[in-house]
Image (cartoon, rainbow, N blue to C red; front, side, top):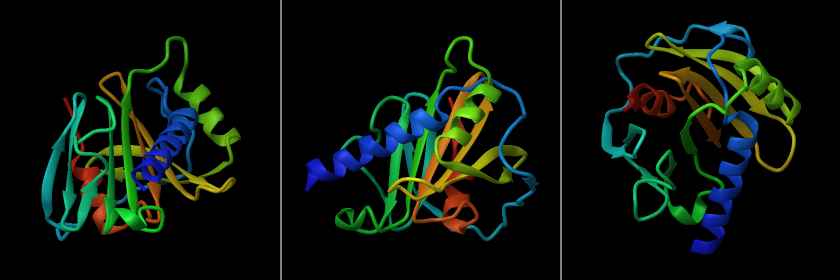
Length: 178
Protein backbone atom coordinates (compact mmCIF):
# COMPACT_ATOMS: atom_id res chain seq x y z
CA UNK A 1 0.00 0.00 0.00
CA UNK A 2 2.79 2.42 0.93
CA UNK A 3 4.53 1.59 -2.35
CA UNK A 4 1.32 2.41 -4.31
CA UNK A 5 0.86 5.72 -2.49
CA UNK A 6 4.49 6.63 -3.06
CA UNK A 7 4.10 5.77 -6.77
CA UNK A 8 1.02 8.00 -7.00
CA UNK A 9 2.91 10.82 -5.29
CA UNK A 10 5.89 10.45 -7.64
CA UNK A 11 3.61 10.32 -10.71
CA UNK A 12 1.77 13.44 -9.59
CA UNK A 13 5.00 15.30 -8.87
CA UNK A 14 6.30 14.23 -12.28
CA UNK A 15 3.22 15.72 -13.92
CA UNK A 16 3.65 18.84 -11.84
CA UNK A 17 7.31 19.33 -12.74
CA UNK A 18 6.76 18.53 -16.40
CA UNK A 19 3.84 20.86 -16.73
CA UNK A 20 4.70 23.82 -14.55
CA UNK A 21 8.03 23.39 -12.87
CA UNK A 22 10.47 25.87 -14.34
CA UNK A 23 9.44 29.44 -15.06
CA UNK A 24 10.77 32.95 -14.73
CA UNK A 25 8.84 36.08 -13.87
CA UNK A 26 6.48 37.41 -16.52
CA UNK A 27 2.75 37.87 -16.23
CA UNK A 28 1.62 35.91 -19.30
CA UNK A 29 -0.53 32.82 -19.67
CA UNK A 30 -3.27 31.28 -17.65
CA UNK A 31 -6.84 32.41 -17.82
CA UNK A 32 -8.49 35.74 -17.27
CA UNK A 33 -7.84 37.23 -13.88
CA UNK A 34 -10.40 36.44 -11.22
CA UNK A 35 -9.64 38.47 -8.12
CA UNK A 36 -10.52 36.11 -5.33
CA UNK A 37 -10.55 37.84 -1.98
CA UNK A 38 -9.74 35.47 0.82
CA UNK A 39 -12.59 35.53 3.28
CA UNK A 40 -11.90 36.10 6.93
CA UNK A 41 -13.79 32.94 7.81
CA UNK A 42 -11.37 30.48 6.25
CA UNK A 43 -10.79 27.29 8.23
CA UNK A 44 -8.28 27.57 11.05
CA UNK A 45 -4.92 25.94 10.39
CA UNK A 46 -4.29 23.08 12.80
CA UNK A 47 -0.77 22.20 11.63
CA UNK A 48 2.19 24.00 10.08
CA UNK A 49 4.80 22.23 7.99
CA UNK A 50 8.28 23.45 7.14
CA UNK A 51 10.53 22.34 4.31
CA UNK A 52 13.80 23.86 3.10
CA UNK A 53 12.22 26.45 0.78
CA UNK A 54 8.80 27.24 2.32
CA UNK A 55 6.28 26.75 5.11
CA UNK A 56 2.60 25.93 4.72
CA UNK A 57 -0.29 25.20 7.05
CA UNK A 58 -3.15 22.75 6.88
CA UNK A 59 -6.68 22.75 8.31
CA UNK A 60 -7.92 20.04 10.66
CA UNK A 61 -8.29 16.67 8.94
CA UNK A 62 -5.43 17.28 6.50
CA UNK A 63 -2.23 15.20 6.67
CA UNK A 64 1.08 14.90 4.84
CA UNK A 65 2.51 12.02 2.85
CA UNK A 66 5.55 10.48 4.51
CA UNK A 67 7.00 10.51 7.97
CA UNK A 68 8.97 13.64 7.20
CA UNK A 69 7.03 16.77 6.30
CA UNK A 70 8.31 16.78 2.74
CA UNK A 71 8.76 14.60 -0.31
CA UNK A 72 12.01 16.48 -0.81
CA UNK A 73 13.52 19.81 0.20
CA UNK A 74 11.18 21.70 -2.13
CA UNK A 75 7.88 19.83 -2.00
CA UNK A 76 5.00 18.98 0.26
CA UNK A 77 2.00 16.73 -0.39
CA UNK A 78 -1.08 17.39 1.75
CA UNK A 79 -4.20 15.24 1.64
CA UNK A 80 -7.50 15.18 3.48
CA UNK A 81 -8.84 12.09 5.17
CA UNK A 82 -7.42 8.59 5.24
CA UNK A 83 -4.26 7.69 3.31
CA UNK A 84 -6.00 4.59 1.91
CA UNK A 85 -8.35 6.94 0.03
CA UNK A 86 -5.68 9.38 -1.16
CA UNK A 87 -6.65 8.99 -4.83
CA UNK A 88 -10.27 9.92 -4.04
CA UNK A 89 -9.86 12.60 -1.37
CA UNK A 90 -8.70 16.22 -1.76
CA UNK A 91 -4.95 16.52 -2.31
CA UNK A 92 -2.68 19.59 -2.59
CA UNK A 93 0.91 19.23 -3.82
CA UNK A 94 3.18 22.25 -3.40
CA UNK A 95 6.51 22.45 -5.22
CA UNK A 96 9.00 25.36 -5.15
CA UNK A 97 11.90 25.39 -7.63
CA UNK A 98 14.48 27.70 -9.14
CA UNK A 99 13.64 28.45 -12.79
CA UNK A 100 15.54 26.56 -15.45
CA UNK A 101 18.25 28.71 -17.01
CA UNK A 102 17.13 30.38 -20.22
CA UNK A 103 13.48 29.45 -19.79
CA UNK A 104 10.84 32.17 -19.59
CA UNK A 105 7.47 32.10 -17.89
CA UNK A 106 5.86 32.24 -21.36
CA UNK A 107 7.82 29.14 -22.43
CA UNK A 108 6.63 27.26 -19.37
CA UNK A 109 3.02 28.37 -19.81
CA UNK A 110 3.14 27.15 -23.42
CA UNK A 111 4.39 23.76 -22.17
CA UNK A 112 1.54 23.62 -19.67
CA UNK A 113 -1.01 24.45 -22.37
CA UNK A 114 0.42 21.77 -24.67
CA UNK A 115 0.41 19.09 -21.96
CA UNK A 116 -3.34 18.49 -21.82
CA UNK A 117 -4.54 21.51 -19.89
CA UNK A 118 -6.83 24.43 -20.50
CA UNK A 119 -6.61 27.87 -18.94
CA UNK A 120 -8.93 28.70 -16.05
CA UNK A 121 -9.33 32.07 -14.33
CA UNK A 122 -6.25 33.17 -12.45
CA UNK A 123 -6.52 33.19 -8.68
CA UNK A 124 -5.38 36.16 -6.58
CA UNK A 125 -4.92 35.68 -2.86
CA UNK A 126 -3.60 38.51 -0.71
CA UNK A 127 -2.17 40.23 -3.80
CA UNK A 128 -0.40 37.08 -5.08
CA UNK A 129 -1.71 35.86 -8.44
CA UNK A 130 -1.56 32.23 -9.50
CA UNK A 131 -1.92 31.36 -13.20
CA UNK A 132 -4.60 28.70 -13.37
CA UNK A 133 -4.97 25.56 -15.49
CA UNK A 134 -7.29 22.58 -15.53
CA UNK A 135 -5.82 19.18 -16.38
CA UNK A 136 -8.18 17.84 -19.06
CA UNK A 137 -6.26 14.93 -20.59
CA UNK A 138 -4.98 11.72 -19.12
CA UNK A 139 -5.99 9.81 -16.03
CA UNK A 140 -5.14 12.57 -13.57
CA UNK A 141 -7.82 15.25 -13.20
CA UNK A 142 -7.33 18.46 -11.29
CA UNK A 143 -5.83 21.91 -11.49
CA UNK A 144 -2.38 23.46 -11.61
CA UNK A 145 -1.69 26.88 -10.12
CA UNK A 146 1.64 28.63 -10.80
CA UNK A 147 3.28 31.86 -9.71
CA UNK A 148 6.73 33.39 -9.33
CA UNK A 149 8.07 34.94 -6.15
CA UNK A 150 11.58 35.97 -5.21
CA UNK A 151 13.09 34.29 -8.25
CA UNK A 152 11.45 30.96 -7.40
CA UNK A 153 8.55 29.22 -9.10
CA UNK A 154 5.68 28.00 -6.96
CA UNK A 155 3.57 25.23 -8.49
CA UNK A 156 0.50 23.86 -6.75
CA UNK A 157 -1.31 20.80 -8.10
CA UNK A 158 -4.84 20.17 -6.85
CA UNK A 159 -6.63 16.84 -7.11
CA UNK A 160 -10.24 16.19 -6.06
CA UNK A 161 -10.66 19.79 -4.93
CA UNK A 162 -11.11 23.22 -6.49
CA UNK A 163 -8.86 26.28 -6.24
CA UNK A 164 -11.70 28.21 -4.56
CA UNK A 165 -12.48 25.61 -1.86
CA UNK A 166 -12.09 27.31 1.55
CA UNK A 167 -9.59 24.71 2.82
CA UNK A 168 -7.48 25.06 -0.33
CA UNK A 169 -7.57 28.85 -0.01
CA UNK A 170 -6.43 28.54 3.62
CA UNK A 171 -3.48 26.39 2.54
CA UNK A 172 -2.54 28.77 -0.29
CA UNK A 173 -2.84 31.80 1.99
CA UNK A 174 -0.52 30.15 4.53
CA UNK A 175 2.22 29.43 1.96
CA UNK A 176 5.35 31.47 2.78
CA UNK A 177 8.71 31.23 1.04
CA UNK A 178 11.89 31.30 3.09
